Structures are given as structure tokens and as C-alpha cells.
Length: 453
Image 1 (cartoon, rainbow, N blue to C red):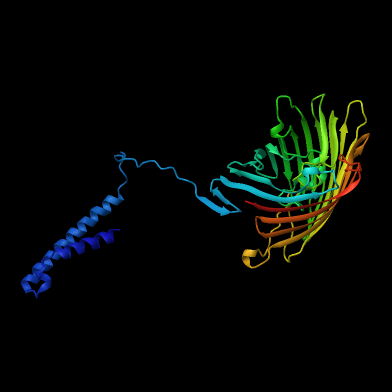
Image 2: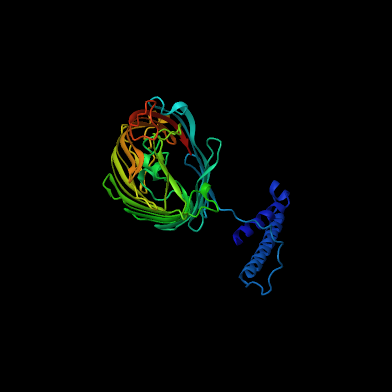
């Protein structure tokens, strides 16, 4: 810095010399006078340099300098990052995140049953099966949240509404979620093989419930358990039902093969001596409210369930199956045990594409060559046999056996079209035909167009 200061002084001094000293030749006397003037300037520069050196070498004075006026306080904002996962997701450097989420499912579906079975409630119809809107995100300290509601069909129904805490393999969740029932029920409706889930999921009342739960997720082991009340819409001053649900999943990956073996348990006490329940299922079509198998309302003091699951995903191929036994404890009567189950196989036909799997459930089918990149998207074909038996211990609710075949097309991420056909065979049906027959067959089909974000 001292050299720069010196150069500046010399340059300034040179510009201050008489212009005639530079513009014309000088006499000997003038040259002598100029040299004397330059020497005087050099002396002044050396004096100033000495003073500057002395000033920089001295310690700072003991008394603090007079304070300068404080600048207006400005709180530094953490850096933000915006990414795209079907919708914009905003993240901050200190751990906050926020993302809108939702889905739209538009169904065209129908049932063809013998005369007298469905009446005007059959045939072909359309509906918005689901229209979800919500948000989810993370909060610093290991917290995450989700708030979501279904606004389809002129109503509002809370779906997932919860907060989770967890910084490692163990997490705790409070709010409304799905209890830990089984593979098909815990797979998001965005990724199911067919437009409707297995019949026993609806027959045995699988739905979201409000409660407190915990989960441990290791590399190949998943443990889930919780205590639950009822669905948020059914929580009233007179509803004191309580259930305990748990599930254990063994999910090792052997090379490129994913295995899934699991068991679940359920116990529910309605805490109401006059409680009744009804076990029934739609014929794989949600556009009708007709149930061909139905126990009617029966008294219930408690219920318990046991489920077994198995699945394998190997390249484009997958197979899955479940069995579930649901026992109803009654007062003064025999306790019926109802049964439901299915077996399924499927194959992704487009090269390089596979069905997803994550945390004990099936996940998204992602096309490696979507149509916006010159491909045809991902195509999957599935076949299933589904069985539901609601006959036992004097209860005649009927048996429903169904063969299903379906086609799934995912042209791009977050867009999916599902089509399926089902052949149903009903015994001891709740609704008889026009001729009084309670054993007959029916045909169903469904077409769903969906987008999610």
C-alpha cells in the first residue's frame, strides 16, 4: 500500500510542474532549479512515508473509536432451491420444504348382471373417482407433514392428515393414516394393478383412521404398529372404538430380484354393547352402489384379523398374493370367520421398464422412454384371481369369485391409463335375479384416466 501511495504522490507532483518544463527545452539554470524542486518533492514524499509507517506500526488506541451509525438490520434468508417432482417443490438450506400434491382419477365403468340384480343402478357410468388436493413437506429437526383431502363428488373427505417425527430408521406418526393392513391396501391407488383393490379390503372395512403409530425401517426389515380410533368423519362423542394394528415385512433384495414376505394383525373393540357392523363389497365397479355379497348388519363385540402376504419382482415380471382371515366376536352366537384373498401375476412389456417397489408396497411404473422423448411409455399387463367368502357360522353373506385382466399404460411420469375386465361368479348372492336365482355370473369393466402431482 505504501508503494501505491508513493506512486500517487509522484504522479500528482509531476502533473503540478510548470507545463513549460515539459513543453520546451530548458536552460542550465532552469534544469538546476528543476532538479532542486524534484529533490524537495522527494524529501516531502520520504517524510510522508515515514509518518505512514509510524502510523501503521502503532497499536490501536485504548479508547474505542466513535461509533458509526448502525446500518439497518437485515435478516439473512436461507438459500432456497426449487425442483420439479410432478409439481414444484421448494426447499431451504435449513431444512424446510413445501410441495403441493394431488391427483385426479376419472373413471368410465360398468356392470352387466342378470335382469333384476342392478336395476337402474347398473349399466355404464362415469365418475370422478378421486380428486385429491393437499400439501406435504419437511420441518427442521426431523419433522414432516402431509395434509390432503378428497373433494370428488360434491363432498370433502380428509385422507392423509398427519405429522411424522424421525431422524433415523425409527419414526413416529400422529394423525390420520392407513392402518397396517396388507400389500394391496397399502399400495397407493395411483399404482394398483386394477382400478379397484381386492374385494376383502372393502368388505372388512379397511380405511384410514386417526391414531398414533410407529415404524422401524431397516435395509430388509420393516416393522409397523399403532393404536387407532376411527376415520375422521366418523369420530363423534359416542364413538369410542379402538383398534390395534401391526405388520412385519421381510423385504430382502437378491441381486435384481425383490422379495416381499409379510404378516399383519388387527384387533378392534367398538366399546359399544349395541355395536353392529356390515361386511360387503362392490363387484369391482365403484360407479354402482350395488353389493352382490353382503352380510347385512350383525352384532359385534370385537373383531380380529390375520393377514399373510407374499410377492416377488424379478425384472419386468412380478407375482403377488394375499390371504386374510377376519373373525367377528358376537354375543350369544357363534363367531364367524370370513376369508378373502387373491393371487396375481403381471409383466411389463416395454423393454427396460419394471414395476416399482418401496417400503413394503408397490410403487410407480416409470417409463424409460416416455412419449415426449420419442418412446411409447411403459405398458404393463396383469391378471388376478380374487376370492371373498362371507359365509360362516350361520351368516350367509355370499361368495364372490372374480377373474380379472388389466392393462396399464404410463405414457409419461405422473400420467396413467388403466383398463380392466372382470368376470364374477356369485353364490348365495344378497340380491337375487328376476327369477329368484342367487347363484349367477356378471361382467364388469373399468377405464381410468389419471394424473397426479
